[in-house]
Image 1 (spheres, rainbow, N blue to C red):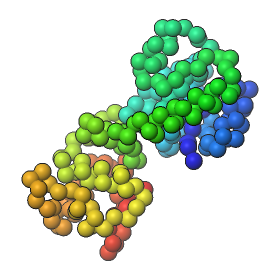
Image 2: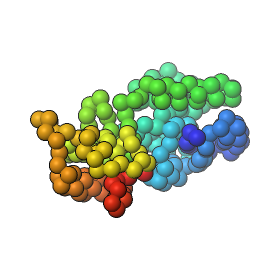
Image 3: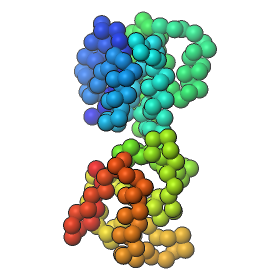
Image 4: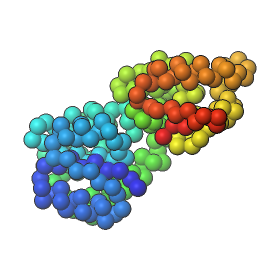
Length: 218
């Protein structure tokens, strides 16, 4: 089920949108303020955020900034039908910009389009816990901070990310992290690399040791 965040302070608009989106099969979290949304984002990963541009304690752009380096797509809702604002929204990475008043069926269609495009056109960006991996650039970020990973640590993180929720034996992991010279990584060395990766990731990603079997990351 797709996770959607709706940040809208107009009660009538929010109530109708939450109902319609849930009828479409989405899980919807509604916030009325920037501070509430930022609190929710610290604990939940969303597929799409629908953000009112003007909010009681700030703007939707502030929330979009917090979503930088994540895979969450953004649709802005606003009463401001201004070309300059629209252009700036798209330049900042917004997937769509919808002006109020809007037709509900049209907005739902835009939501479906954005989610489809994100799922099928953003395969170079992966998310694991609080870490975002840009596979096209070969870089990983913790929030906005670039992680200083060795090539083997990066491949180890990528292996966990592409097998999220699955139990991986040590043998399976070793097969995925050949070193740059083509030499096989030894079993004892794997323990060292997992220890180093845990230290660099901190609490952002939980690498669980399944005693006698291997590792799992949820």
